[in-house]
Figure 1 (spheres, rainbow, N blue to C red):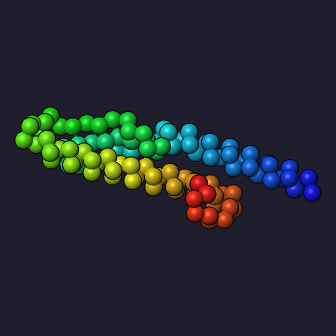
Figure 2 (spheres, one colour):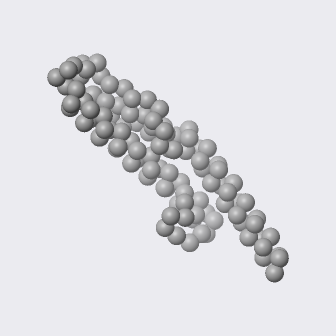
Figure 3 (cartoon, rainbow, N blue to C red):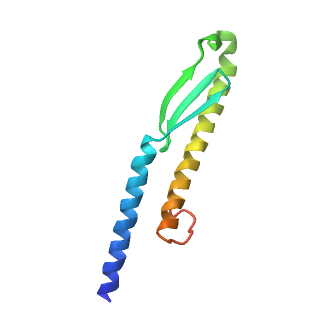
Amino acid sequence: MFENFGNIMDMVKNIQSNVNYVQEKLQTERIEVSSGDAVKVVINGQQNILAIEISSKYLTPENASLLQDVLVSTVNGALAKSRELQQAAMDKIASELNLPKIPGLF
């Protein structure tokens, strides 16, 4: 009985090691999303915003409301791409370890 427990613990350690490796790798990934030439957002694979660039030609009081909307849209687009990258990495781990597809596992 305890032999199986050791095997399970080894499997858990292996999964944790793989997840930690992927998390470190995702931290170094860079995703850039632009809204034309107005706004560019750079984000990593862990949904941390690294940079936001706004073209100076759009920084006018008349454009403030539009620029805010474009910024929100661009950040949300970058976050969505980062989540997709992270999910693909976790799916790869699950596949490599022959884990069943359990929603919310990773």
